[in-house]
Length: 119
Image (tube, rainbow, N blue to C red):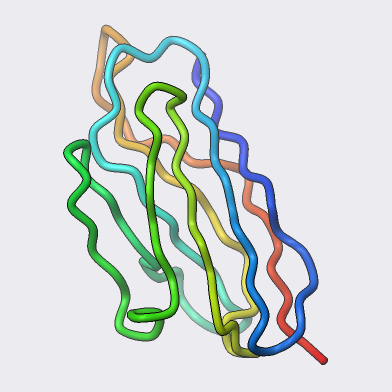
């Protein structure tokens, strides 16, 4: 059994910062890509940022220059540092990890954490 647990969401004022964390636990042999997605009201799910196992990263256009993704492979953890937040960043943020359980490669998802940007 594999679990991804996000934390760090909350309410923040515009131009503020938040740091999200996601820890993967359970029957994990290897983790390949880790990523953050978000679901904004009335929008489709979108990729926020992705980081490969060797540290290469990709960002959605709307967050480039403001967000930074990182990971600690020793802790099976991925982080998302969000700076200069805007009201349009309000969303539920989901962690995703493509990992090998010893039997199969599969993309696992966390339960989501709410981020609200409002004054």
